[in-house]
Length: 66
Image (cartoon, rainbow, N blue to C red):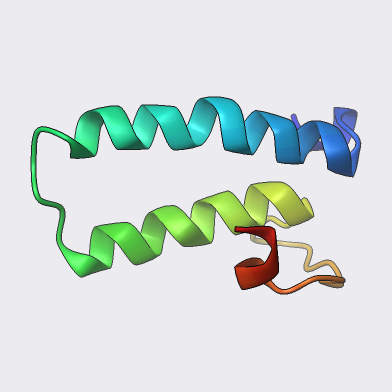
């Protein structure tokens, strides 16, 4: 689905929906560090449009995006 959205569209979706969903669920439970790093990986892969078969060039570091 990320192929249908522009970079800015993916960034807005990531910040509004995906982060709020993870914050909601993680407010109940303390997540292990492995889960947090996996979520960050999923978020960054969605933002950059990467998948298992194709890697894309990253123009800005993930820390700058956050």
